[in-house]
Length: 136
Image (cartoon, rainbow, N blue to C red; front, side, top):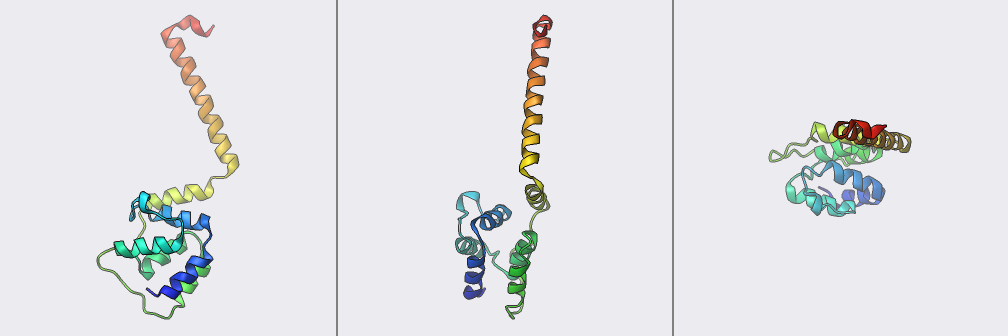
């Protein structure tokens, strides 16, 4: 893979986007080995045999970085295919990423409240089972 192209991609990604890419790659690379800069992520992907145009295209498509996808495709090089590693992201990883995208601060607060209410209900239920008169 062209190092100049990877360097340009690295410059265009902010820390949050690199974190998203690391999350998507966490089935390929051990979470403890994931880095905070795209350059280091690319090195780890290359070591694992996943640094190819098809895999990067799927990452950029998933994270909706159309500009990087176009940059990758306009590189003019023939798309390389790797027999050793399929260029795909697991469905469950994509689902988790979609949940992450859809989860707003308001929704998080609603989930926290629902969880808190559920825990209160469970405590009340446990007390009523232990000692039915404890709830009165």
